[in-house]
Length: 526
Image 1 (cartoon, rainbow, N blue to C red):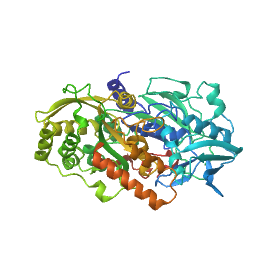
Image 2 (cartoon, helix red, strand yellow):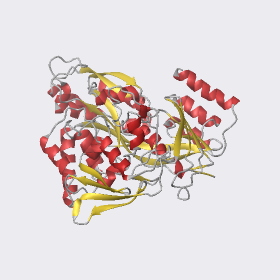
Image 3 (spheres, rainbow, N blue to C red):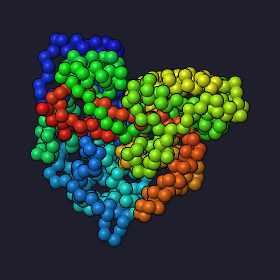
Image 4 (cartoon, helix red, strand yellow):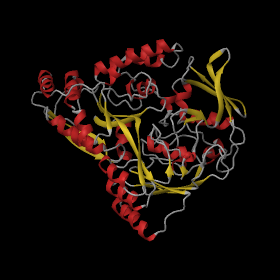
C-alpha cells in the first residue's frame, strides 16, 4: 500500500475504530526499524524496536544510566584487568521458552563481531568470549579496557539454538540487500513479544507473560501498536485526533499546537545526537561533481569555506524553530571529551569563504550531489535544503537527492555517496565510539561509517590506544589530541545537536531518554 494510502487509513481508523484500552500504547514516529535482526544495523530506530524484544547484558535506563539487564553484576577478574566477568540473571527464558544461558551470550557476541554485523565496531577490543559456567561469562580484551561495558548497552542477546535452527547464525547483510529469517522474526528475552509486522506500515507487540522484570518495572503496557508515519502533517493529525498516544518526533513548527491541545503534552530534553555533513575528501576525482580530474573536497580550503558558509544560527532559528543546539564539533555535550571550545561554532563569514574558494581555484564554483535522508532526523530534508542555499552563496551548486533512510544509509555503508548528511548518537557516552566508527581509516572492523576517505595513521594509532589505556588522565589527553587533529583537518561539517520533543497523551507518564530510546517497560499510565 502506498504511504499516502496508509496515512489516510490511519486517520480513517480514528473515526471508525474504538479507542484502545488504557494498557495499549499507540506509538508513531516518522520512520520504521530497518530490520529485526539485532546485529544487522547500528541505527537508532532499529535499536528502539529491538530494545522492546531483545535485551543486552546491561542497558541505559530512562535517565541514561547504565543498569543491570541480563547480567546482574560485572567486574574485571582480580589480577587480570584484561578479562571482564559477567554474572548472568537466573531464571530468564526466551519468548519461545528456551532457557537463557552463557552459551547464548558467547554466541551473540561472536555473531555481533562477524563481517556482516553493523555492531562489530563496538567490539574491536574483544579478543575472546567464553562461558565459565551456565551463568557466568568472561570477555577478554586486547589489553585492559575499563570502558568495555559502555559498548554493550545496545549489544542484544539472541538464543543460539533458535538462530542456528533458522539459518540465522550469521547476521543479515543489510547493506548488500540480503534478507533472512531473523530480519523478519524474533525470539528475545525482553518485556514484549512480536505479534505481527508489516514493514513501514504497522508492528504489534504484546507483553511477555514470563518476563523476569515483573515487580521491578511498571510493565503497565500490555500491547504496543507501532505505526511509522512519514508525513509530518499526518503524524500530528493522528496525535491530535487521539489515534496515537505517543509521538517521538512532532515537527518543531507544530510543538506549540500540540502542547496547547487538550489532553496532550510535550516533554523536552537535549538529545545525545549530533547532525553533520560528510564529504569524500579521499577520492582523486569525484563522480558526482562538475570538476574533471580533481576532487574539490580534497582541498582543505574548500572544506573550510563550506564550514564557515553554514549559518548554523539561521538553521536553528528558521528551520528548527529554536529546537536545536548549534555546534562546531561532531560530539554532543554528553560525551567524554567534549569542551565548550570544541563545541564553539565557527563564525559565518561569506566573504572569507569566497576568498578561500578562489584561493583553491574554485572561484567560479562547482556542482555536486548531496544525499540526504527524509525520514530519520528532525527536519532532515529541510536542513539539507537550507544547506543547499548556503552553499550556493559561495558558488557551490548542490543537487539534493533525498531518500528514506532505508535507501540512504546503504549509500554510506557501500561508499556510493560522495556527499551526505548523517546523524550520530553516542550510546557509550565516550569519544572513542565516534572515532572508531567515523574517524579511523576504513579497514577491517574499524571505520565502518567513515565514508570521507580520511585516513591518518597517527590518529588511527591513538584511537586504538584508547581501548587499553587505564590511566584516565592520559586517555583523556589522547582524546583531546585526536579531536584537535580532526577539527584541524575539517573531516566533517557539524551543524547542531538535536533537541528531543516527545509528545504524548496527558495520561502517559514517561521521561525523555537522552538517546531517544523509549523503553516502554518503564512507562506508566496516570
